[in-house]
Length: 608
Image 1: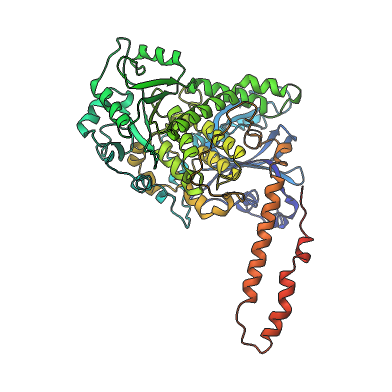
Image 2: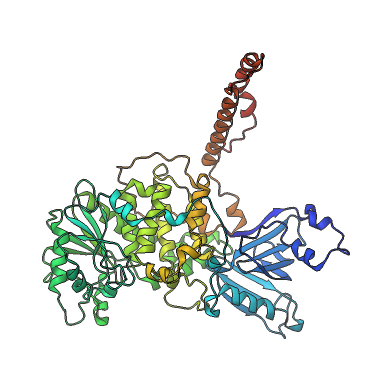
């Protein structure tokens, strides 16, 4: 995980610094900057340079920056303890030159770096001899490898883990867990070669009565060929969540009998009186999309369906909203106008609309009515709504493994455009396809974990780790736009899955307060009074905020769990058979001490 400019250790005790500088080789001097960082397998150092970091919290700091093919690492030399920056190059969204050769003023010549994780970095260099040219060129090359016809770091990584994260999600296993196929729904491989829809997965679940030829006809009437397919089925009432893209109605109001019949088959599968179609867009946007050949399901054509608009804005609105949020949280928070400034970003308003829409979907399903969810192309707002509704309805997705399955299924395999929305390795920072749709979804999940602190097996650290590696390009999990592109680039065999790391260190991501309640449906309150800004993510680079991150209750609970494990270990040691004559005496004399917590509890300091 990338770290902020936080003091990490006292540089005066670094063993390498005790060596005689006169006898040290150039290589050992370079290694001095690496004393507190372990390079990843496959990570290689490219350059290091004396530089000044214009820290927004500590002022100008002289130090050394080194760049690898994976990260930018800075360590200060003039403060004790040292201040460090550890930034994966994938996090960098923009690199600009600051000032010119004739610029006046102290530290006015250097580099401005805009990051995708809510922070900006500024470095100053000496003006003579074009001192920034080499570091600018190297940063530009390795931060934006796609723009230089190079591979992303994930393809160079040689990390090995006990667990293989690529085995987490197996579509057939997940459908079987849901009780599929059954007499009403069947599995189809019509998209095995991505001919039906190149942004859908190869395995799809469709109504039993729909033939593969019917699917092809429906595909022609849905944007990008993204036909309605099953995402989740309620085990008891058999109501389903289906997802798709908008119908290609256009200005002339075209109709397609195959599409109309197909939606009727979805409705009939569990005897729903009226199929509810949730269009994530504001109605005015849906109408406007008719001009570009899109549209929505009109009452005249789809008489057995009701259409509900959820008023969630598009990717461009979300992008601008997060930009405004970044402006008010980094580098400093202005306390005097905080509430009005936060309100002006509309970020929490958008979070509210997404959660509110998902609640409507979940509530309709709980009542036994099947639903179809779509936006324009069915890979942004649609994924937010289906996955959040499934998280509310199905306790399996609230476990550590189940949540990974949910992301793999609804986001990764069903074609959320990660490459376009994040811009992995692409220098085109102003690309209009960029948007924080997935960040917004993870924020919604965090809001739910706040309202239901015992319902989720995973903790906040998992959510932050997911977002950090959404950008880092260290793992192959979020690379490319769809499954067909990942297959073409052999991602599963050439890169490591994020879940390999997570599941090999599972204890770090577990919520100590988790209480399994698989059948419980969660209905979060989507009121502005109950929603909070995710401070420990959006404002985590501020040292004042970071010091307060650990929950006192969670910290105390973890201490007690550690103490319990310590006593269990001691108990096991005492129960080991001993062949010595004094074993029973030793056992008897040791037991009271092991059972007595007095000595150990005195060392605990509760922050409550």
